[in-house]
Length: 456
Image 1 (tube, rainbow, N blue to C red):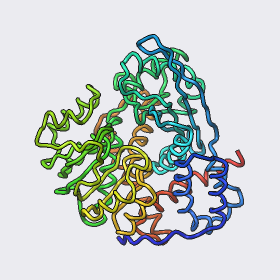
Image 2: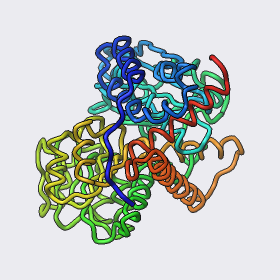
Image 3: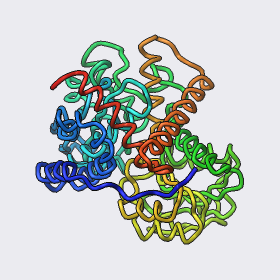
């Protein structure tokens, strides 16, 4: 398969829509970036399908159906009242109930959540499951907070959010800063308020409606997608050196799956810096890291204390470490043009995004220009929401599937997304362009559904 990426077509109508998005949403640079990344891929679609322009699908699809903002008051362990800002952006429900994570992080604002909800719409479309796009969260930082403080915050957050969500309306999940602990506290408060036990959140505990493989799904799915990319070149993870950014659910479970497939991860990153372990992060080291991160909630500096042959690169990211494959799994715009050039010069030939928009536009251009296999997050990290959709199905049926069943479904979903991206890019005369393939394939399903349902 060719990987030569052709320049995007210019389209005056799309340029006008983008200018309008920027004017109507000032200072929301992440949302502007996400809208530009998708819409600029759609010029050939707009030329083939004039009904999209006639019905103003682009203008409608870039406007959230609903935005909810609210205050979240809570009391810390010192008896001091604290106030945070909460959000839920219900972006598009054309193909199903809103579905997307809740993010707790000090950087959360409306623009970031609009970008995430917009991306989620197309990501969910690619999974082939009936899920619309949404995203929510709060500017709450869980670091250095006690369990009781986190619980009180989650309960206050859900005391407002509960009236806007439901198993057939909006089904949130976890995201950055929201794991099993936070989902548990929010679910308990939701159940208390509505007096119903229902599948309103995904990522739940296994004892109360959760799905096996859900915790691992985004990381596993990322590796399954990258494996499909490598297969187009007759290659695999076996014997490859990999680097990861992030040290949460996605990054650590990606390491686990890479180990299973014969690869070696030599670097991973958290808030404080990068662990560089030339010998590789094997199963024993990974088990230690999971306990360090998920149980002790500590810094990766503890890894080097345990394994002193490794180095800790304070304040540095993984991108300076020589590798074959790079998987960014942390946050938006963490990998810029300079980092991309460093990766390319160090021999990296495959990059798959495990988080939402972690590569800047300049970085994407560098990868594509240098014929690096590059997959955007809306395709490569869709495994998490894919298994969230499977959790919703299990809840609706009052069933629990085995881990083998869920993993088979996950592999099938990621293979299907990969095939859709490759086929669509080829259909629009841009073979090997996963960005264009993912954007067009995700968009057309949502757009056609919006046409079918009329002007709503």
